[in-house]
Length: 96
Image 1: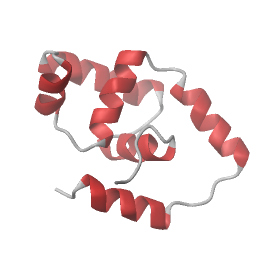
Image 2 (image 1 turned 180 degrees about the vertical axis):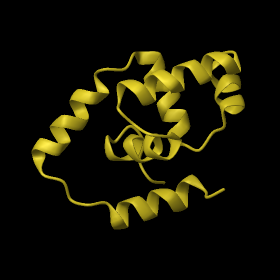
Image 3 (image 1 turned 30 degrees about the vertical axis):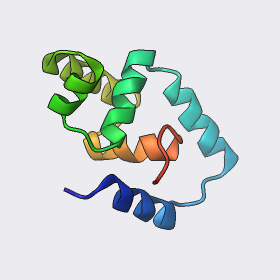
């Protein structure tokens, strides 16, 4: 497992500089998820497992899995890795 700190540095170094319309599109996609889904996305972006997210947010692990599935669907993401990248690119989390 790669530490969130290392991931953040890599993302900052290799992140493409996107035009303003790409930033706007990301912001619009972010508005598709609920506040609770956003909390889950932040935790995913920090590298937490479903069990760790469940404990941190006082949820059942099955609820976390449901939230994550809805997040991936609503944001049109393929997997957890893309969710982490999206969290960094949308500035929900920042490299440490």
